[in-house]
Image (cartoon, one colour):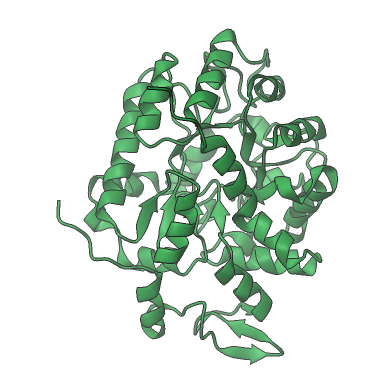
Length: 393
């Protein structure tokens, strides 16, 4: 396989005039506000631009693309990855993403292995990306001008035995969601008819994940399975992409306050999504309503448990080809409560981290707190989870 040309954020800065602008040297608009690229309508404060430049910005659920056939083509043929997509990622302000898919079924073991091998091949061939294996790699990605990827899966059906945890950790997997929306041998998903909690096998999987240093994620788990995971894990448990049920009553993909409190007791972090129906039960649904979820978590359990889990690619669900969007909607129960649009427009574009940061500034968050939410909290908790002692010889 031929090696793709190296193209990093530094290249992007050097070619800003032709590729859409850079964080530094953004044109001044008015009263301390700057536009990141010619032709863009949105402008941002100098404070927001500085915070993005200085921070480790981690999106704990974001995909290379929601056009899944195209994404698989990129993994099979990394040289097909478009230069324009590289430019968008390198200008996004995002330090690292967690591009986890919801994979399951009778062939989950082989299919997840193939997916991770495809990602590893892609990362080996594309110098603008780097695999994140340790917490130090986040800073390494930022310093080298690349975008990091945390390998994970939004299900654990590929774990046929506890030894598979070690096997997939060896493939680079660092995060595992215990269930997707339905029941598996580990526990119950958020839209399952009954939630009977974590199974004995599920407890053994959590214990082995703790041992090898793989993060437990309960974003799509049912309420009882979620609470059981907090009890079973000796390490912090993550909710990489969810929202607060207190603000979106009854939605199965949002977490009740009881679960958020228990997550905090483990030392975990929740990433807030911009999925429209997870944010508010009716219209209008805006960025301000999404920011309400950040405020709720901060007040309830503290700013140190708060992060970002957008649950989209750089463009969002509403930009998907129509037939793929319809297929996606058809794959979920009515309790997902899809509406005409899935995205919140203000954060369904390649510069969404700047819009979120502007929102945090409007809400009165300090610079220190904004850095924690942008990525500092997830980096800290992943360092704790991933740090394991080597076995005695």
